[in-house]
Image (cartoon, rainbow, N blue to C red):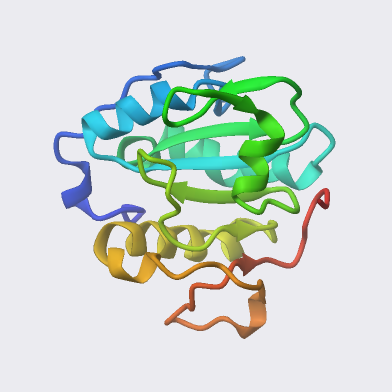
Length: 191
């Protein structure tokens, strides 16, 4: 099987879990301390992938099981990026990228998350690196968009500065993807 990410990105990248925890060896790491994640991301020069989920989202579970967990456990994704999960319906406060405590809802609203699953890549300051991927339509349909997001974030950072103004349908996207949100066909919960 072809490597998911360029081999050059793998050199010297070894990540620690920071302030994250997981229920089992195959679960994605969940965190409420984005400041610790930012410190580790800055230390290793890697981005952070945030997976916004909610408890009742079946597509979130499928995305984790079919794409993210296999890429974390047997692939390159866990080496080139810190992948963390946040339940958007989680109550209370979390630690933001700058170390300050904020309400979870403020954190979620900052990124304009309106549906789950939403996957977003950010730098150590919490600044988006490319458009979010919203929804899930199966492994084969998802992988090209995840690979494109990582390529843009690493190889073409000038393309990541445009704001996400409105989502596009999957069938309208082509090889030279615009900076609009990548809206896939099946979306879990809505916001």
